[in-house]
Every structure is written in structure tokens, then in C-alpha cells.
Image (cartoon, rainbow over all chains, first blue to last red; front, top):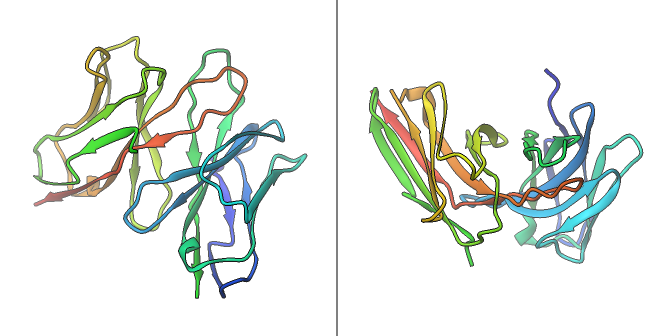
Length: 116
Length: 115
């Protein structure tokens, strides 16, 4: 079965540089979520998109922005990178939801960002 | 402020034993409670989930017990196997019809199943 695709899988950047992470959801999934997971930490919600519109925003720095495109893929843009941005970044997708239905989120393999 | 509290932080269980991980939540608006399994360097994988209208759900060796009045839920892994060694996260969400519903995770439990 098709899974969530994230690219790149690994990324090394210098401080103050810019990074772009990409996420391709499972086919027929219209909702995308971004999470950040620091070493030994639980995933923290950053931002979500439903039908190409921003749905909710969590603890996402103003230096970060994201969007969902017409083909439902999403990109997380990170500028002025800091050492503390080093983490695993996960994208998850959910299928089109029936009224009152569950919120099954399927996670991608993640992008490991290292800021030097 | 951790909205979903998870314990224990780590757990060692012998092969064939029962692994029990507990979670407690504060927000009574939460109405969806999934458990995720994560191996090192991999994304979390959905194991099993429950809604608050049932007190127990079983799928294979995995069982969720849910206590709405106590605002607690737990994961039981029966006949634990070395391949179950991973980090387990409980999570909670508010189901929003027609929009995205973010997951709030617990702090995770590192399970080690020994031979």
C-alpha cells in the first residue's frame, strides 16, 4: 500500500540558511499535518492543512511557513535556521473524513534536519 | 503543560509477559485516543485507537482500556515479543467534522522486551 512520502530524508544546513521539506500524502488523502520531534521527545504539532487551506496552527515559529498545493502535496519552508531547529520533521496525512469519523493519521518516515 | 501524561517512561518486560502503559488526559473535549508505535529513526505507526463511547477495544495482542470518568486510558500488550521493543506514544484529539484534527501526544514509553 502507498505510504506518505517525505523528501529529503536527511538534510544538513548551516545556521541562518533556509530549508524546504516536502510531503506527498497517501493518494485520496486531503489532510496534511506537520510535526516536529526533538531527540527523545514526543512529536509536537506544527501546522495542518485541509483541502489546501490552513486548518490549525501549533507551536510553529514565525520563521517557518507551509502550504498545501493543488495536488495535495505540502511543503514546509524554514528560514533563518537555528541550532534548535535540529529535529525529525514528520508529515502525516488523513483520508477524507466521514461525518464524526475517526482521525486516522498516517505518518511518513520523516526528514532528519541537522543545523550546524 | 503536558495535556496528555504518560507512564512509565520506560518498561522492561520478559518475553511472553504483559506490557501495560498508562495515559491520563485533562481536556474532556478529547474524543479520539490512538496509540502509536515508533521504532528508532522511523515515523510513528498507528497501532489501535478508541473513541470514548466504548470502554475496551482489542486488536490481536493489543488492547485499549478506557475509563472516561477517570480520564485515563491504557495499552495492554499481551504475550510481549522482542519485536515489540519500541517507543509507544498515546495521543488524543478532538474530532472536528470536515477539518483537520491535530494529535496531542504523551511523552512516550520506551518498551524493551527481553528473552
